[in-house]
Amino acid sequence: MNQKNLLEVDWSKIPAPTDDGAAAHLVGIAIPPVSLLATDDNSVTLSALAGRTVVFAYPRTGEPGKISLVDDWDMIPGARGCTPQTCGFRDQHGAFTELKVAVFGLSTQTTGYQREMAGRLHVPFEVLSDAEFRLTDRLRLPTFTVDGMRLLKRLTLVVRDGRIAHVFYPVFPPDQSATEVLHWLESHPILDVGNPDLSG
Image 1 (tube, rainbow, N blue to C red):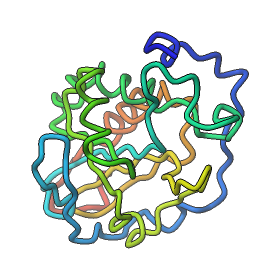
Image 2: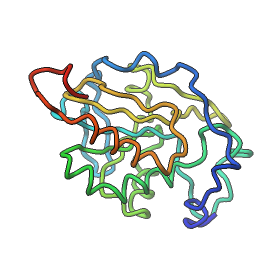
Image 3: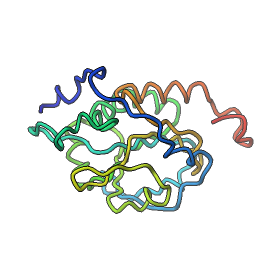
Image 4: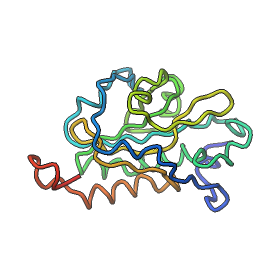
């Protein structure tokens, strides 16, 4: 499957995920002080970042030349769409920068795998590897298992000063995720840095 096919998806033929409540506990909790390796080989501690940060978590991106990740991957609700979602955040990265919002991708794939994807897709932000599930388990992020692989379910976190301010879950269609997050950020400006109740 080439990159064009990974991006061109008829979402009406893909089963949409449902809200199973697995992310209902996340809003308002603090990010644990876990350092994750990024695609630039630096470690990132999300809990230490000031301001607003967007972290979009996804199961795994596809590999060029492979027809599918696993049998019936497209029929797993919420599984398909990691490449279109990543490209959406890539294409709108300038808008996040204007809002002074940092963007990170997150998956349980290894840094080497993520680095190949980031280079191939010309991703302008870093992707974080939680291959050991240190952040996933501490936050109790929703996961699923397929073909012996434990993977993150797709969700997006808006983090403000180390605390989760908003969660997008489930995320569908994934190619509209960046636009949806931008709209939320624009409609929830930081009005008063001293009063967290006034803004997201």
